[in-house]
Amino acid sequence: MKVFEIDGRAFKDYEGFVRELYQQFNTTFPVSGLDRLDDVLYGGVIGFEEGEEVTIIWKNNQKSKKRLNRDKSIILDDSAGGLYRVIIDMIREHDNIHLQLDDVDI
Image (tube, rainbow, N blue to C red; front, side):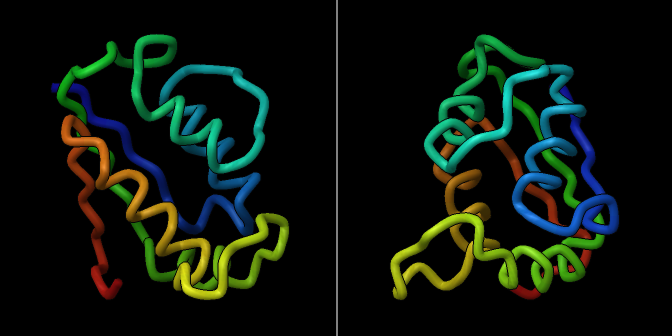
């Protein structure tokens, strides 16, 4: 199983989050909206194969939670619960991706 680690202190907004994640995946896909991120999480064209079991360790996730929820670059439905929540839910929808948050408080 491949393990990828991101650090919430390394980014301040959605674009930074995607760059940090893509750097771990060893890909240079352009940063774009949530649909592209979801496509990348399926695997096959990045650091893991489609369906391959992987773990994402998100260090300092509470710091990034505050930062991501302040980012207004992505338009969300009012019921979405903030950008951080949308990203967490999106990652968890992929059964092959195991998400570990080091300071959990979703």
